[in-house]
Structure formats: structure tokens, C-alpha cells
Image (cartoon, rainbow, N blue to C red):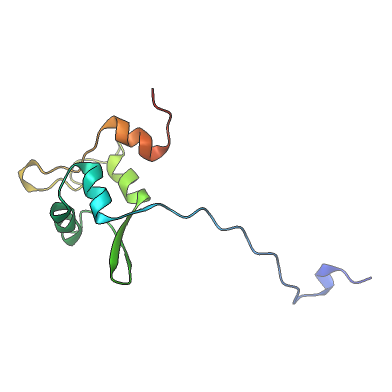
Length: 103
């Protein structure tokens, strides 16, 4: 009888992939933060928001949205822009993003 250990070239079953991360469009992100898409594009250019570029499109990963809504992130890290143009959202949106139940 042959055992799998005796067969070094035996293919292993693939590992399950993690669920795909939500990617926000610039327009969706702008709506979420109650800002114009132009402002969001400026924040991207200034490096205040980290993005994923897919071909000619730009997407904002949900992990970036969560980073920006984290209470542990100070205003500078959260990308506070000139003129009080802050990257802050409401607690209700934060709960929605983290999947927490509404209270």
C-alpha cells in the first residue's frame, strides 16, 4: 500500500481563499464621508488615503476605511486636510463598516 508521505509529488488540496475585501469606488467613498469625489481624489493624490489600482481604476479597500474610522488613529494619521476638511465619519457608519449590530 502506498502512503501519501511516500509520494512527494502528490498535489495538496488548495487552501481556502479568504473572503474578498470590499473595495469602494471614489464616488462611494465620497458619499460615505459626505465629501465630493474631487476632494477624495485630492486626498488620494496627497497620500492621505491608500488605494488599490486595478488597470485604469482606483479602489479604496475597506481596511483603509476601517483604519480611518479607528479611534486609535489621530487626526494627522487619519488624513486631516487643510481647512478643517477632516476624514471623519459618524459612529453609525463606523458600526456599519465593522459589521457591528446597530443599537
